[in-house]
Amino acid sequence: MHTNTATVAEIRSDYRGNSVARLVSSSILTPAPGQYLLALDDDCLLPHPLYFASSCQQGFLTAPPIPPAWMPGTILSLRGPLGKGFNLPTTTQKLMLVALGSTVSRILSVGISALQRDIAVTLYADPPLPPLPSSIEAYPLSLISESLHWADFLIMNIPIESFPYWRQYFGLASDEPLSFPGQALIVSVMPCGGLAECGVCAIPYRRSWKLCCKDGPVFNLEDL
Image 1 (tube, rainbow, N blue to C red):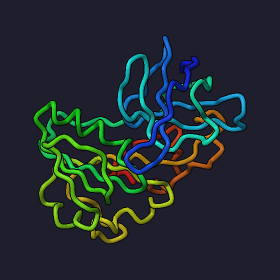
Image 2 (cartoon, rainbow, N blue to C red):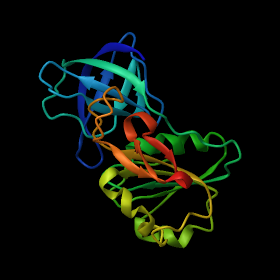
Image 3 (cartoon, rainbow, N blue to C red):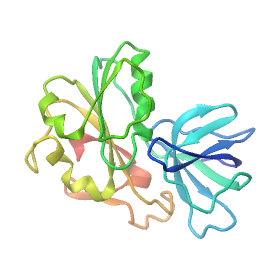
Image 4 (cartoon, rainbow, N blue to C red):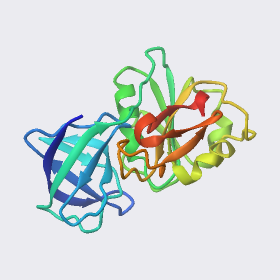
């Protein structure tokens, strides 16, 4: 586990009008897609999880949301990277990206990296969408169930409050598995970052419970 500091160099609005931060540091450790950093400033009572959206010089651009009090010049204490990130199998040929929730930012970089491996990529998310590479085909969430025969791997972003219902988007029964493997990033508040096992980010897992902060936040879908 590593700790360091970073500066909020810029606050931007993303394609949906959400505020995001550009962080810079001489020693920042950039989380892999799906991993997170815990960030704390002098005015925060609890740390805020930050996810990677895209690279920038000496740092990275975060996925939304960010605390509203942050402004250019805010100094952050960072811990991480923490948790398990995405791991795209080498055998993947057709990748389906699914963004449930308010942003595609946490998973889009996985699709862009897949294009560099000549993997075909489709994205399912409700508009508006950011500018996409021409090779990524985009469809609304309502069309997911019509395309399940196409993909051989799934990368998905799920807010924890939507986790119990994710199969409904695919037209599956409550206990019906997908016909192909995949991974899901379950987005939750994670104030302890796995240190206290506070249970705020707990999800049901087979016959037990798992913590997004420590056991995830990326999980294999066949295990959920």
